[in-house]
Length: 58
Image (cartoon, rainbow, N blue to C red; front, side):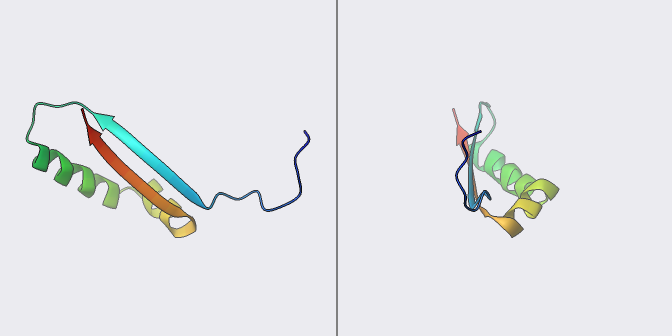
């Protein structure tokens, strides 16, 4: 495959989720933050890498 020697691990993950809603922005952000904080996937990844999750309301 032509891969070079070295550490193949991931050190950082940046995730940007886009959402469209007519609801109050503050309510949406609170729900988003609560969801991310309770996510098993996010909690597991955060232990292994720098995890940067953002919400963009469009």
